[in-house]
Structures are given as C-alpha cells and as structure tokens.
Amino acid sequence: MILNDLAAYLRRKRQGDPGFHLVSEGGYIVPAADGYEDQEGDCSGYVRSRVIEGNDGFFIKAVPLPDRPGSGFTHFLDGIQRTQLVGYEGIVPLVYGFTGAVIRERGPNRCLGVWEEAVLKEAIYAPFEEIDVEGLLECGVPVVDTTFWLNVEGEPTSAHYRTAAMNAVKRDRSEAEASLARSWVASCGEREACWLFVDGCLTLPMQHPKVAGIIKSHQTQYFPARDHARILRMEAGERSAMFFPEFGQEGRRKVFSWYLRLHSCRGKDLTYGLIRIEVNSDPRLIGEADAISAWLMAERQPLASPDPRWDKLLYPIHDCEEYLRSIAPSHAVMEGVLST
Image 1 (cartoon, rainbow, N blue to C red):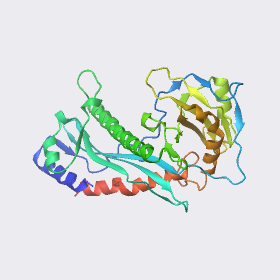
Image 2: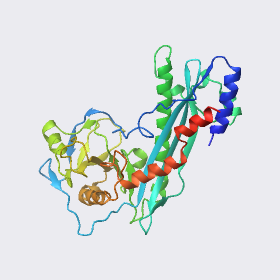
Image 3: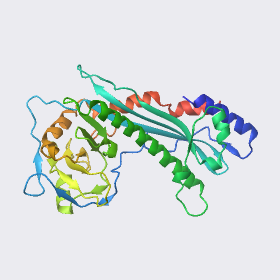
Image 4: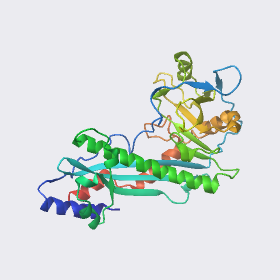
C-alpha cells in the first residue's frame, strides 16, 4: 500500500506549498459501491439485432432445468475500483485510485479460492504538466498521467481534470480484468471442464468460446418495443431467443446475446432479476443458450445478500468483490492516514 508514502508527501506539500490544498475528509468521489456499475459498454439507446436461434423469429421460452441442477462455470472474474480526492494543486485535483481484478476458482468442495494472483494497482491520477510529479515519485508514490483523457477545447476546468482522472482509473480497472482474462484463456481456455463467468460485457480480450459475460444494467434496447416488452415481462426461469447485436461499426466486438430472468419481478421494477448474457460469436454456441441459462439459474444459490443488487448479482461475483474489498483501503482508513 502507498498510503503512508502518500501521507508523507501530502504533509510536505501542505507545509511548503501555499498553492496546495489538502483534502483529508469526505474526499470519496464515486458514490456507487466500489466502482462503476457494469455498463453495456457499446452504447445506450437502440441497437438493431437479429435473432439467430430457431427459424420463427423472436421468442420467449422456459429454460429446461435438470432434475439435479448444477453449474458448469468453474472460474469467476470481476474487478473493483476505489477513488478518493486527496488534494488540489491549484484547481487540479489529485485523485487516489485503487483498482483490482481477481479470478476466483471453484474447487472440488465448491469453495472458492484465488486463481493465480489478483491484479492490483494504486496511484495518483492527474495530468503530469500540472502537478509535482518528481516530488510524488521521490516519496515512492506512483503517478498516472491523465492528459490523454482531457478531451476538451480551450482551458480545462477543475471538473474536466476530475473526469479525466476517473476515466483513467476506469481504464486501469478494465485493463486489469482484460489481463486476467487473457491469462485464463491461455491457461484454461482449451480445457473441457473449464468455463469463465465474467461480470460485465465481453471486451475483445474476453471473447472466447468458453467465456460468458453477464450484464446487469439495461441502458440499451435491442428489439422493437413490442418484443422488448415481452422481455421485460418474462417470468423467472424464462429466457429470450439468442440474438446478434448489429453494432454497425467494423472492428467492434461481435457477440451473441440473450436475456434471462433470474427472479420474479412481480410488484417490482421490470428489470428486477433480469440479466443479459453475452458469449463469443462462435456458431457452435448457438445451441448452448439453454444449458448456460440453466447453469446461471443454479448459481442463484447462495444469495448474494445483503448486497442490494442480489437479484442480479450472483454469489461468486459477490465473492470476487468481497475478496478485493478486503485488500483495498477503506475510505475511513484513508481519511485516518491522510489526517495525521
């Protein structure tokens, strides 16, 4: 952890630089839990899609469940990010960022353990030309240049600097997850008994025939209103037809997808318990939607409560987050260190 080195640097700046402002309390700048909620990645709004399963167009069906339910998923990947504002150089915020990603592996006794090693990173995020980079490095504090993310005409504002830092932190979280996915594909991707479950959409490094991504947010609509209404009104244990989202840009990721209802939404929001699954656009996977959906239905136990997202957050992903949270410094710990 770099917090003691960072605290030493901040004390020195506070004592010797009248243009520096220390933020030792209430610097938490991401109100969501430990990181950004998984977004659909490609866009929001409407994306035209075509059904690739069956011959009769769009459909909703009940997932056939075996008498002895079980899951074929063996590995689970997720990441977190934490950010905290620790000071200002003039109007430029110094943002501390912690990013981490881990793959948890299910053993023969069904207990989850760490596969290989978690990928962790801590740094101060700010534009190099606006801050005391040499002073930070001398104190042993890593620094990430956010200049690339200052996509603004004219003079940047303090808000622009903060947004750039947040984008850089999110990039590092994504890179941590992608590096683990590449390692898993190289090591386990060809094993018959291995499947990787990823929280979020499948980025290019994750596109492999034995990797499935689970999306919990629903900003993008993939079907006209009549068919989308049928998706929103699915019962627990029902799924949609598998479809191919036509993102319409060459070089974009290509995936097959379908919707699954994990828990009933009666009396609740129509997206309650609703997830969207992505798999690699391998024709061999077109007939696997039922089997993968049955695995996901089996993963509903144990519940990921008391997490408020438990209706869509399956327990192994909750376990990934809890493991990473045990490593990341809490905001209370950070404020205690920075106030000394």
